[in-house]
Length: 442
Image (tube, rainbow, N blue to C red; front, top):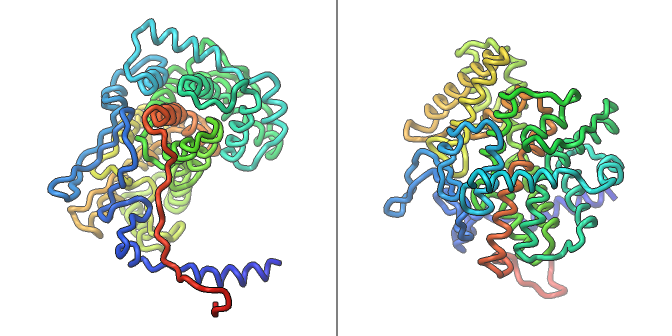
């Protein structure tokens, strides 16, 4: 069977070849991208704006990055330095369109806390019963399993979806952490830790509480994770996972199926798995030259990667560059500063210094190769892996933690599209194969 399939696969590859020139000939936007790299507009939103360039006289001009939640600049929101519940404030803003008053925030916090716990026996019957080698695949299954516990799972009424969505935002820390310990215990043969959610904790605090064996965390650690959740909460209506959620939801299927599709998208290393790619790259670099590597040694390794002779030999520097941001990624700018503070407090200043020097040297070398007018910046994934590590979060939880944060964005865009766009999303693809009749030669 394997030999047969291999031979047929090679034949099909040849038959399915599509010349790249045909995309231009038929004016087809490959990957929903315009020829200048900008994204094809596929919808309207009032939730989030991602800005990284301007279009002047039909041409793309690079600009400093900005990310807006309901019109508020993320940098301004992050600079508030909330002691607690910064993520909850952002969730309220994204879902309801305005920043909450103190009274509204307290009511929202209580609503979330009342929903922290998973359904009765869900952990033992669903999560612990079926561990998976990949946490994102198990998260998909866990979310789909919540369908069974829902009294009205197929309702697509926006108000009902809001209730389901808020419930899922509240449950994500437990789903992610319990999924991790299910795999850790039953597959990796390590200790099993099951802490119940604490209603007096924020979502960030609960994540750390449930993850750590002693359930303890510092104020600075909780504030840092709170900030990470804030900056990952949304990224526009057409990022891959949000768009996947919207596309599936447009068929009028249930909410859990749409979220499962988003989770499947986020699993990919080109999307939510990017922070682990950065982490793996730095493992290899530090193994090669050490954490005290000089600028000259970093320069050598960077050029070896660009020359495809070191690491994965793909010619890429992971954590640099973005589909929208050009001169700067505001999320990376925010996280860089907080990561530095955390690293110093944990006596890991050398680690941060290495990342920072690597970033500057890699950008400099890329400009040398592509020209000084070429703009590339560190994206949010460049420092998120190091920040997770400083918080003691296992690599396997990087992407589930991203999903925990992004859930509110998926919920908001799902509802928004139900309210203003009732059509099934169905773009078209141009057929460029031959038309044949039975009996003709292959």
